[in-house]
Amino acid sequence: MWILQRVFKNVIKTNNFALVLISIIVIGGSSLVMHLLEPATFPTVFEGLWWTMTTVTTVGYGDVSPETVAGKIFAMFLFIFGIGLIGVLIGKVVNLLSLYSKWKEHGKLTSKKTNHFIFVGWTEKTERAMSEILEENQNAQIVLIDSKKTNPCDLEIDYVQGDASEDAILLKANVLEAKSVTIFSDDLIEDASLSDGKTLLVASSVERLSKLHNKNIYTIVELRKEKSIPNFSHANVDEFVISGETASRLMAKATLYNGSTHLFSQLTSRMHGDNIYEIAADPSWITYKQAFLEILDKGATLLSNGKDLNINRRLDEKIPSGAKLYIICDKNTYESKFKAG
Image 1 (cartoon, rainbow, N blue to C red):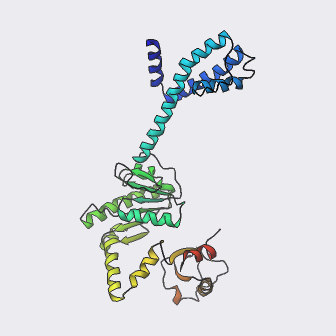
Image 2: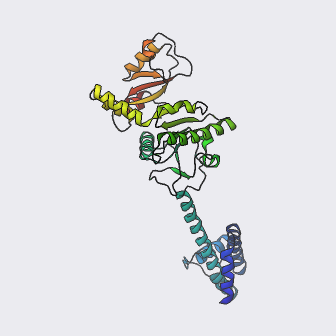
Image 3: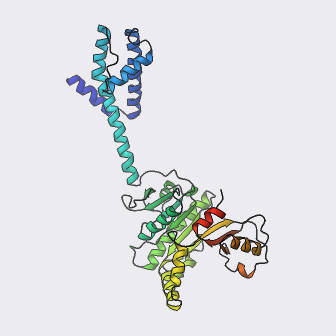
């Protein structure tokens, strides 16, 4: 018994690769030995493998068993060492799966996602934004970066724990293959300038990596103060969202034009009403007027080309190549008449 304890203690300490290799050798060797010892009972090596697997996994169907003394002696050896070895192997596998789950929950794994959305900073706004995206596209790939010890989100996403201003953390989120990076303002920092400063630090890190690896990373940042925008001039940020000031402007609009917030709610939420969608310009459209009329005929309204909202006053102008046309319509209209594929 003492010898067996020593043997199994050493087996448990064996590294995983060696343990798998030993298990394969024991199972393969036992299959061959049983075939050689009892060719009548085990006419092929596969028959020996079948018996070996049912034995070491303790299934024991009993449909076939050794009949000779030599075969039975070898079977007793396999009962003791083979079953113990497979038990240790299964325990190792379960432990690895548990460890993988723990690392994933604690954000220690490197994300392999590509063409994904990266969100930096966990707040209620982050959760709502991710939910909106998944509501629109259930297959959307999302990675969250935050400093919390465990994944704070219940959605099906990848979590990376750490400081998003560090290159190693951004690379862990596979930032170079990301579709976009959205940086949320830190609500835990009371001072708006300090909060925007932290956002600037993360945006600068993203920009540095994009230049270093010659990648174009689309970056969206949330700011607390509009006056902070000039500080981002070197960071090549694509879009700014002013959190508090945007809410103030919406409140002012609602005061002046009662009910106007319902319009903004529809346009900014995928949950109900009409939404804004991006479409590619049809090759047959020469001018904005042609596009406007055909889009209108399909039940939608042409809103802009990118951020250019005054195209309705320039309908006779030609649509430039690479135009990003935005339309307003309901989900069914978009999917049936505009969505590619």
